[in-house]
Image (cartoon, rainbow, N blue to C red; front, side, top):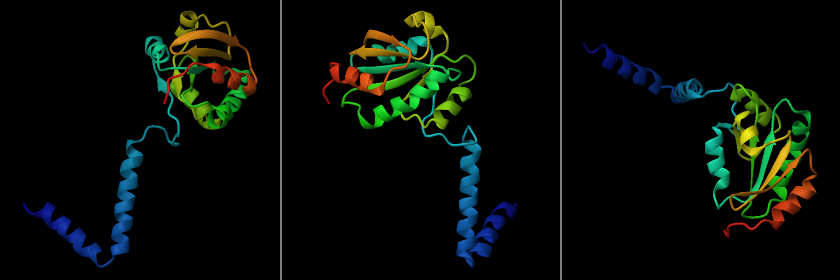
Length: 178
């Protein structure tokens, strides 16, 4: 009958004499619970979001969106070279009210994209859309940068581009006032 309750009381009585031990046990239980609930083994600072092309289109067609869409794939060496430069632009030179997001064309599992984003410490939002975006946005190669002003795609720039050019494009955009 009372075994469960007695066990709890015995636990508290036994560890009440050793408060440090009790805190270590509670910390270990908390860590175990948190570790058991998290997905990937390594924590990520910027989770890649898997979305379909309609959801992504809704995001960048919003009149509040002015900025750059970086179209890339994890298997593309020029994309791997360009993402860190765009990350610096995002951190250091992005005008207020502008956004930078990335869209992955990778097929298959999101963890492949996530590994690249973690490895390159990409700070801006990344969406895993897949190859369906190629036809929808008429993408001819990766990397491609789409320049978007208040929800309208103004231009598509295939290939790699210096951060200075992209910074200049951002500065010229009409953007929502903050």
